[in-house]
Length: 379
Ligand SMILES: Cc1ncc(COP(=O)(O)O)c(C=O)c1O
Image (cartoon, rainbow, N blue to C red; front, top):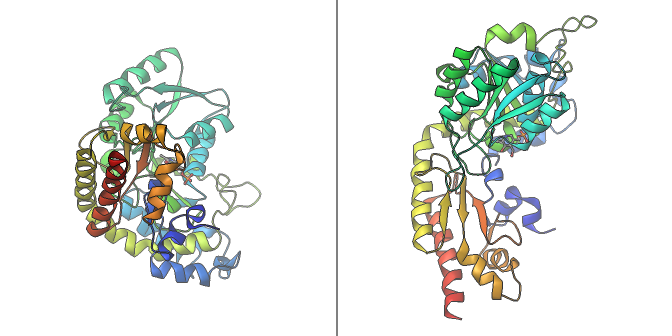
């Protein structure tokens, strides 16, 4: 199979550069690759289990979860199978069938599915449309207030950084609005936890979810669910029949390589979030140089505050119209230059990220796009 079918790990092995934002934060450092091998057996994490995953001392999962809670500054943390399972668990624990929740208009589909699976209704605070697609706190406030006038709102969900435009929301302001209105806030940090510093207490979120395979250098599937202690008894309610087991966690969650790699990557992740400002500078440089190529426009809030970049690219669309390979030409031209991660057939717009790339690699990518444009402008 080709490297683009496998994704970034394979791409790196073959010395390709992968621009897929979804995959850039989930690359395993060397220690985690070793852990992946060591803990590849199904229940390998459970040799010294005394009844529950978070209480295992060898390897020291208890300590790891405490450190993870410190890292994002929240009282209690559990691992789940992904950000989506974290959202589902919170909704399931605090809402009843038929309840209504409020979300932002840039919410990931998994927020919608978690709500649907819980039989919840969704009211959405829309973004402000083209070209920035921003979630404004005042819009969120208005929508939440209107919703509260009509019905009881048990939960507000906010996407910290969305997967369409890479906009960083003003979570602190929205959290304080929710607090004033008496609605608990769940902050979806799938695209931020593990890439940038997160301080849940400073933000004021009641719940927070992260994604190990997306942004925390873990093999996955694994996610992080954090909560303030006031919610502990509700979210981590114990089974009546199995006194140690937490119902929403179905007793235990990740039981092998996913948690082993999350743990092995943790020192690397803790260190890399301190380089977030450099990542932002690099992203802004990349955008500036790409936009100089002409008819390439960054969508979303400017200047960027996250590495996920969405470009509108009329230049590639017009080349595609007269190219014998149509929309596939861009993917194929990039692949020839050992760059992968832009979807096949996409030329009108695409999402990309240079997260964790060196400046040399970024320059190489900019030059590759330039080269492709010049090639077709000449012909
Ligand atoms: C904003 C956002 N939330 C949630 C998810 C899903 O994360 P997970 O796979 O950990 O459930 C994604 C994945 O693309 C995402 O972009």
